[in-house]
Amino acid sequence: MKRALITIAMTLAVAAPAMADQALATSKNCMACHAVDKKLVGPSYKDVAAKYAGQKDAVDKLAVKIIKGGSGVWGPVPMPANAQVNEAEAKKLAAWVLAQK
Image (cartoon, rainbow, N blue to C red):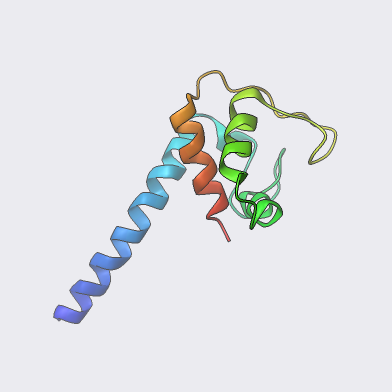
């Protein structure tokens, strides 16, 4: 019984931050164009994580793109600027995106 409770507690501890960051992505309307594991209007978060894997400055690069928008990296549809996202939120979102594998 103790082992089961520990396993459940560990699972919740790991899932809670991931869900909190997905909740942030949802609240900032990121999920309207992106999904974790499939392309919508923009690339999946897993594809973004794979593209930027191993790049030391990836969180900062993505945070800037989240705030300012961008174009040409993933095709002809531009990503609009997200003025409702502050720098701390953008870095949190970028770190979460890069953790998707």
